[in-house]
Image: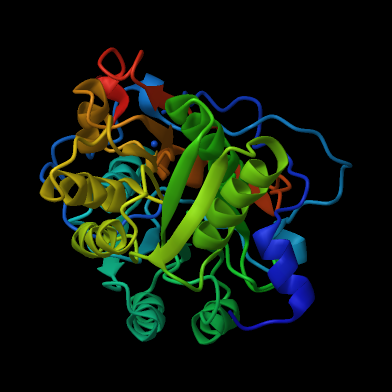
Length: 369
């Protein structure tokens, strides 16, 4: 990230939030994924209404949101407009496939004239180039899933110079809202980490030696899912010991490799907290390779809500999945529509996320992605 300590703190600890207009008719369902998924495209559409995002309700003083005038933008009609979407990571991951498809589906529903889609393949320099290419192709509004929370300054500056608003989703950037970008839509990642700790306590009866598979560095998702888990354990669960932490880069194969190494070097590990499902599924394979039973000998808790992880949960090889909903399309385009209609847009639009456990996994498998 580039930016001051103040900006970093604000990015990592989102401020009090305003709700998106109460008229939003979106309902609830599964963030940051990279890696292969056997069923990446099997449930990647926007899904039923019950699987779509809903913004948390909150109140704040009038006049604090971003408007066309404050942002220095001109009004356009999204119908017939050219909109760019910059995806951060390959759509081979279930989260990214669902995210991209949701944007495509809603763009068609809204009547966008042309949707331009790029994929940075987890490379920040490519994402900067992608965004500049989208601007050169005439994008009038941009939706960006950042590779990192830091480093998009050149791309954001280019968009500002052309009078193009940038709505960020999934990962929050450290730049200044309503100056460098419009707003952020995403989950409460710190709360996800806390809920994962709660689920781990329940799964282990309050006593465990836990290894954490960290996400990729340089983004608020990893930072907050880690701090949320550790803070909750420290505050509430004295019987849970975190004995190892190592990055798996949100990737299934790397998660498996790291989990195998940790299980070999520390045979007392009997629980794994993976900061996304891809790493959790990799850890499940590592446990099997070690001759142990995942979900029993080694408890596994992860975050996302992919179909494969929820199925493993239903099959008894997993213990809990905290949802992180990737279906950003309806809420993203509603936010842009409200913005162009003159409404104030809050800096952070935080969505509600559900949770899967061994009691509800089979029943709610249809909400997974």
